[in-house]
Length: 68
Image 1 (cartoon, rainbow, N blue to C red):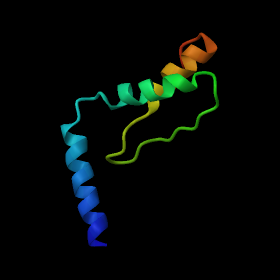
Image 2 (image 1 turned 45 degrees about the vertical axis):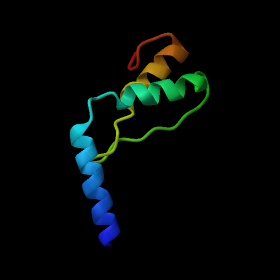
Image 3 (image 1 turned 45 degrees about the horizontal axis):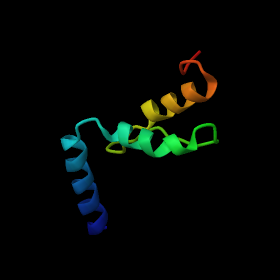
Image 4 (image 1 turned 120 degrees about the vertical axis):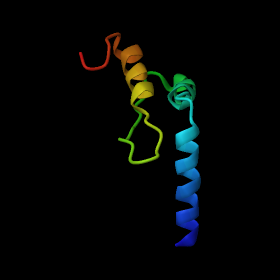
């Protein structure tokens, strides 16, 4: 249990220090998979929010902005 607490504390610290570039990095990784089915998730707590990268991939696949 102590390892989980320590991991969460490190992740929380990293989350607070992030510049918001995480979705850009994820978008770069996903660029090679445009048009392929991918799965996403809703972030909880200190998890990276993949929504911007997934929306970008969706709009490039459909030619429309996400939500249209």
